[in-house]
Length: 213
Ligand SMILES: CC(=O)SCCNC(=O)CCNC(=O)[C@H](O)C(C)(C)COP(=O)(O)OP(=O)(O)OC[C@H]1O[C@@H](n2cnc3c(N)ncnc32)[C@H](O)[C@@H]1OP(=O)(O)O
Image 1 (cartoon, protein in one colour):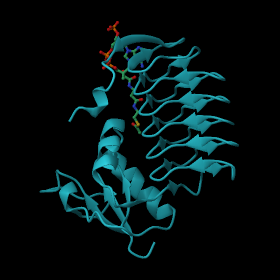
Image 2 (cartoon, rainbow, N blue to C red):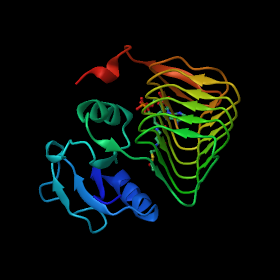
Image 3 (cartoon, rainbow, N blue to C red):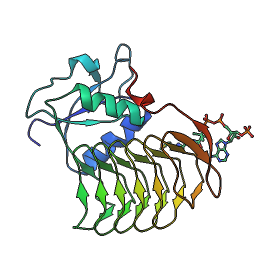
Image 4 (tube, rainbow, N blue to C red):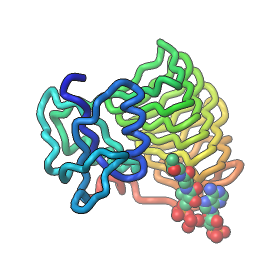
């Protein structure tokens, strides 16, 4: 932790990430955002440059503080050399059998049970629970208050809105969006937006939409 933590993004989510990092013992080394000019700062920390100014070198420890899954996917692809850290809030609980991939963040009040797998740059947001044997793919975001029962799979890039519940054994396909308050009671396909209880697709996107720049 000696060089401190470089934070990519300076919006509302960055406020939560900065406080999470500090609670976990990190010093903020710098915050970067393309809207850095005249930025008021993040909780007293200046925004020191654009994303292009991030020193993309081995040994530079960093986290992406942007809630949009596609943006985290693109930044992970852009910054090849950074050492992505995992951040775990001291007031969360994670089974020692859980595997967290680089860049994953776990907010206050979250609980992750045995043998869950948490992918790259995943956000397990405030007071979410992830039960035994769940698998969260890369760039997933489960918003505050989501509850995943056992053996659930959330595939790469998918977003679960606040308060979503997923029943045991269900899968959400890649790069799908589930509306706040939904109950996922059947497996959902990739690249859809689904809402309601039970959650049903209401919109569909072309596969690969998240790759477009
Ligand atoms: C700390 C943080 O803040 S983390 C961020 C947490 N953020 C969230 O939880 C936001 C979750 N987002 C939502 O639920 C959004 O409403 C989305 C993603 C489902 C909206 O998707 P869009 O494609 O923009 O849908 P749109 O707003 O056009 O709505 C389409 C229809 O679905 C309905 N709808 C939208 N959201 C929901 C929902 N959560 N549950 C039920 N119905 C919904 C709309 O009323 C609309 O119905 P209508 O066609 O009968 O008028």
